[in-house]
Image (cartoon, rainbow, N blue to C red; front, side, top):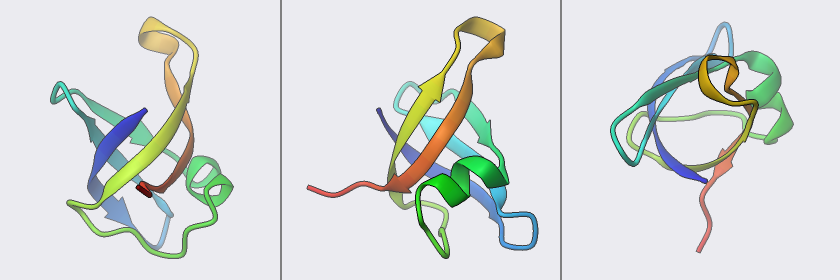
Length: 67
């Protein structure tokens, strides 16, 4: 699934993305680390993997979107 980086805190390695429908979805350090990134800037297109459904939905991986 694709999204756009919305916020990122380099100290905690967590932040949030905006899904293409505008829904914000937070991610934690584990999801950031799983993607192998070192830095993320707001506005970057990212690829995410999501686990769970509904209110239990969470991001398991954040990495840069490649074409």
